[in-house]
Length: 85
Image 1 (cartoon, rainbow, N blue to C red):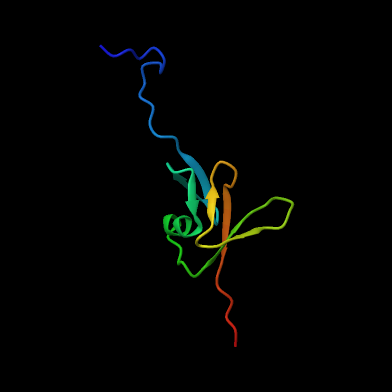
Image 2: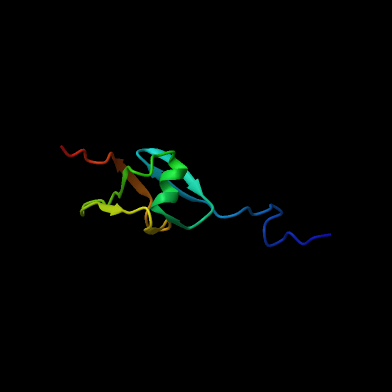
């Protein structure tokens, strides 16, 4: 018989990291995601610009190749690419 005393008898699943994009709540079992992965999880076109909401400071643009730690970065929003001409 397995000893479940330390877990209270309940199986522990993988840790989930919650975040939001444009107000839609998402979660990942990965702590580190790239901007491209965040967009893909949210169903957003890769050409759209992703930003991290930085509270009272300036918002930070997240490039497709930029890695984000979901422990400390949790709220994102998008902006369509600028059209010149």
